[in-house]
Length: 370
Image (tube, rainbow, N blue to C red):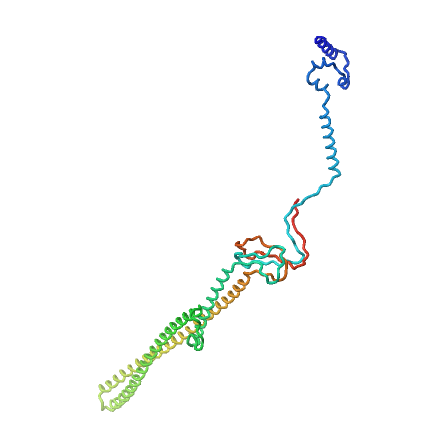
């Protein structure tokens, strides 16, 4: 049986490869059935080609084709929702009220949240007031010191006692009392220096006036002697011209007159020097008085300028102290709150809370990014 099957296969191959033999079309060859004995000796490719595909494989192919067809139809006629995500914020038509930090400060408390309704003068954010209070205390002490200094300079210029009579002293425990005692000590020291300097000028003038008076009296005496010696010389001249007096006597009288005249000239020169010295000392005394009052006046102007600046700075510091509690300027709704925790530091002019009037139309604004 096997030999017969082998001969049939061999005959079939010889028939296909014989020259001049016309092959059937592939479709007929595919449909041509071969006996099982022949198929046993065929290659695997021929066996696969002749084998029928399983039913599951054919249904899988059909289902896959149907799925692709449905996908094609859905892509043509179907609709898909588009989801867009973006960062945005609520904006209003009216201009919002932005509450900012006046300077760098520590945030102690945030009492509002976004969307909360607030009343007028309600505290929204509380900042640390340590720096503002320290500045105010320092400025108050400076103002007390400058006020006492200005009052002391006024008393010096007006030549009045300090503290002025009838002025109530400040309590001993206050900074004003300490400054008053300090300025009183400075006033006493300067008055002592002023009196000592004036006393020096007065003693110099007193001595120079005494010397001038003595010199003037001596000069008057010498002038009287000069008048006498001049008259005596004139008498000797007359006697000498008449031949009664010798020439030696006349020359002796002339010598005495010249000696007294020289003394008179020296005394007049000394008197003029003394008068010039008196004028110089009086000018120095007047210049010292003028300079004393002028320096006190200039210092007073400078102190008053510093006092005005310190008062302005105190007003600013008090305003800053009031701004430590950020309050609502009107009835409104909180639109936005800064992302800051309690204990964080707020920068200068940093927006902390944004308010809008109640009932204000609002919308959204963002940069869309799909």
